[in-house]
Image 1 (cartoon, rainbow, N blue to C red):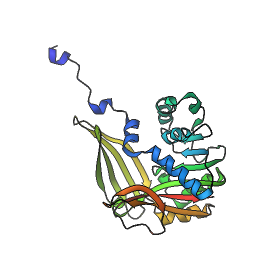
Image 2: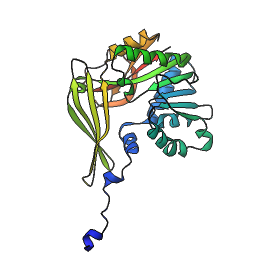
Image 3: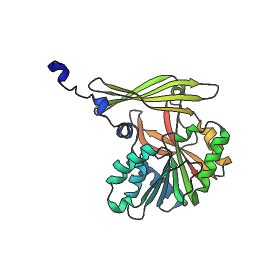
Image 4: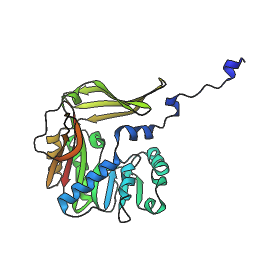
Length: 273
């Protein structure tokens, strides 16, 4: 064995990377989310929300951020994937102060069968509910969300759209130490089936291809509003993002009955019980 072979190869950045940490850094901003949830709920209901349920919670970062607001705040995270919940328990819940940890409950369960105490807020973010690919399936989930809320509870979902949402394309975003690549690999206009991948590329040239893959139906804003009302919600309002002086999104979402004809957009729908 020569010295070259005997020398251990240095692992690449891709090999050393933590997929869940990369995902959070690339696509989540739970501090902003919690601020939006609380401010919007107070604006609608005239009181603070204290109990949150996070469906499809993944690493449960939003739940952890929620309980950081104070000792009155509680969160329940629901996800069917045991491995991602374990990661969240170790790396997110486990890093909270002991008193905060006690107010986060993570459940390995299906959102269609789980039973939890009624909460003020229920959220399904990161387009996770797009897995329901027919109106009947989607309505059944929205009905379960409705019954999981207190009498003046509010349900929050996010969505994306615009002409570019129906293209087979890649979008690259640079972050510190890596590039995030959103890949819309396949789209069927007859059914609105969409298959997307998340890839990561690192400064040393190494890559993680198909770190995450999603097979969804791309739902539109009017469809979602209609199905929410069919599920029992009294009102379903789209919150649209404003623009800064350069025409870029400013992170401020407000009620909007029209929206803007942007090539690509992300919005929220806030459904009131």
